[in-house]
Amino acid sequence: MSKFGSLYVEGDSFFHKMNPVVKTLMFIFWSITVFMYLDIRASLFLVALGSFLLYLSKIPYKIIKNLFLAVIIFNIINAIFIFIISPEFGTTLAGHKTVLIDLFGYQIYTESVMYVVVLSLKYMSLLPAAMIFIFTTYPSQFACSLNRIGIPYKFAYAFNLIFRYLPEVSIEFKTMAKAQAARGVTFGKDEPSFWRRVKNLFNIIIPLMNSALERIDAITVAMELRSFGKKRVRTWYNGVSFTWIDAMSLLIIITMFIFFIYIRCTLWKGFNYSLF
Image (cartoon, rainbow, N blue to C red; front, top):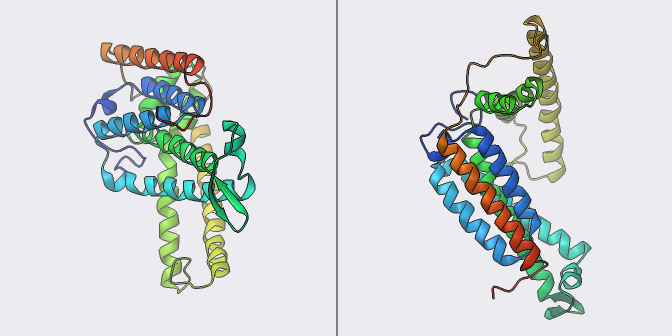
């Protein structure tokens, strides 16, 4: 969390200077492109391109490493559930079966394994764009930019509050966890019983939810006292002008999005796990 009390990370990269509206459209188009394909070639390309863009954003490694680890763990859990619930879904998409491993009658197919690989790459390719959008966008500037493109300022300000107060909830959670640990109540590796860990975790989550609701109520009262929402328009202290660099960036983003749609409709139409 930055000193501004948000997820924004200070920096001077190209993405930090980019207009928040352009970054929003980039994230939207990127997400559509990721879920539009079920082809390993597209997924690998998006992972490589996203990693390069993430490098250009100059976001510190210590901030993003835990997110990558979380996505990897999620992919492993997701793969396990896919093999348990629908082990032949990949073969259905491919239209044929190739036995890879036969374990006492339980067959694991190459198509199913590659389907899991492609799906995991899809989730991994979505992460860089999300991190660039979250960590290089200052909340007030983002809300101002949304309002300038026609979104009502009430909705824009709601996004501002989400970006600003989520880190505070995270800090409060850590504070409560440390306070509980000082009393001998933990939910980490120090507690051998899994169910006791879950119980101890709920003992933190419930007070945390109550605290968050109290904070929401306090913010609501403060905004009402300042007559928030009384007028149809409002001014903004923090705003980012739309430059020619933003215009060129948006043109490149739209061009690449159209190109990906063309490739999807003509060449890479369905499920494919072959590189050639």
